[in-house]
Amino acid sequence: MSYLDTLLFGVYPYLAGAVFLLGSLARFDRDQFTWKAHSSQILSNKNMRLASNLFHVGILLLFLGHFVGLLTPPEIFHAFGVSAGAKQILAIVAGSVAGIMCFVGLTLLVQRRLTDPRVRANSTRMDIFILLLLYAQLILGLLTIPVSLMHLDGHNMLNLMGWARNIVTFDPVEAVMAVSGIGFLFKLHIFLGLTVFLVFPFSRLVHIWSAPVTYPVRPYQVVRQR
Image (cartoon, rainbow, N blue to C red):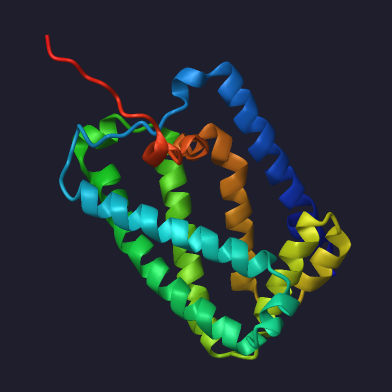
């Protein structure tokens, strides 16, 4: 267990989590005018619907898969007859489908953001940075798939699950011990993922907190003609 592992995977998660929560609360309290998605669809609509839908569906599936896959105790999977190896294969298949969807959508969004003059002129440095950060994180995640295919015993997956569960139960020592046994690619993937949470409050990603989950059940808007 090295000092760097302790710093990046035992301390950094709590720093990123604190900034994520407190920073989001502070921005909502002080800068509500900036609390929006800053949609640029009106500036350029070419391939926007396809790119946005692929990206959002893909990234939501990836987030849900990571959340359930990392935080569900192995005993629950075993109770349903799912071994560590079988769970890893399931994660690879589901992650590949969602990852490819997200990659296609995000590639189109990155290209649009960087090459369309009107969209580029209305983009902040943070807009470009967070988009490229998500792109790098997604590519790293896809690169872990062939590595996982070479080791289908579930060892790396169990270590990752152990790290995540120990972090949320505030046992950083056990978390660092679990993550110390995995490869560099997986560690870099974790580090970039934590960095996304760190910069979250300072980007347009804050609109996630305002997801329209109540939209299907809200009252109809009555519009009367003059």
